[in-house]
Length: 111
Image 1 (cartoon, rainbow, N blue to C red):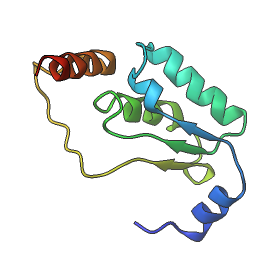
Image 2: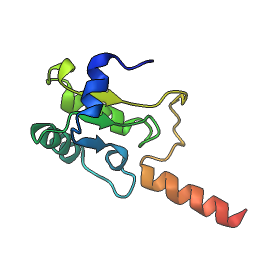
Image 3: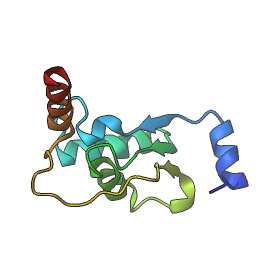
């Protein structure tokens, strides 16, 4: 979807950006309350561009951004995500991003 003029002005203004990969438990598990508090703190400190993806913690990062930003005026920030990945529930899926990375690395070294 093309960006509208407001979004383009926001991106060109040099506003601080906040990336959401770590909030999907990429490097270590982050409690929900800490993740939400961090996003809100970033917003209060001036960040207005937030980036996430369904791949970050199997949707966990996106959920946390939704929780943290739902009470903020929608036209006051830009939230980007990625498309093309379908998340489907599975009882065998790793519960955290850390587990998924560890499992993938273990498989790649034994193949």
